Length: 213
Image 1 (cartoon, rainbow, N blue to C red):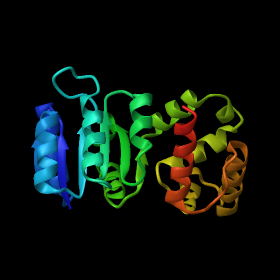
Image 2: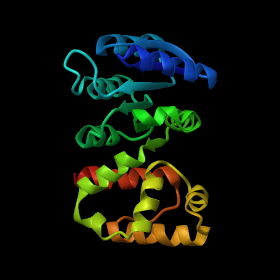
Image 3: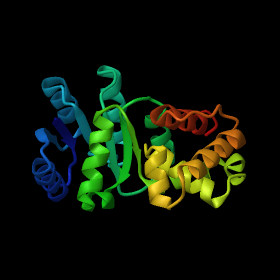
Image 4: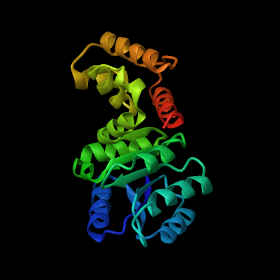
């Protein structure tokens, strides 16, 4: 699986490259700025990309805008965004483009197996969201989310990360029937048609969040 990385911090980019190689990924290119990243995507046509939200010259939103541009130029290009902080507006813009998107905080990279799993999920067309990103997006959403119980919020966060019912049940130590019931309640409270299709329900939640952001 070929990866293109956009990260200007040499220490982090080197660490990512070594980590990915150990996990069996092929790092096709490492770019330190927007133009180099877009050129690398055109040249290597990677299976997935990893992009820092903040790149030179202003270190504000160049990375996320580059990710959006790359997805416009190459529809369906999987993008996993890394950020030091949660950027609700930028996260919403990226997540409004379906299939193969992720948004993780940089400190998650140290959890090597989880990070590799998230990258693989994104490369396969799935969605992977950092729990803290989900929490802040939900808080940004406002009143409808306030109607959810604490357990329903936990389950919604795990759903948005791309986990299926069995994984959610195992993580929260509850039965499949309990998970199914909670999911039904979540969609009912949010005014969404319930479904057990993992990625479809993630997209439904994200569409709801984005359409009302």
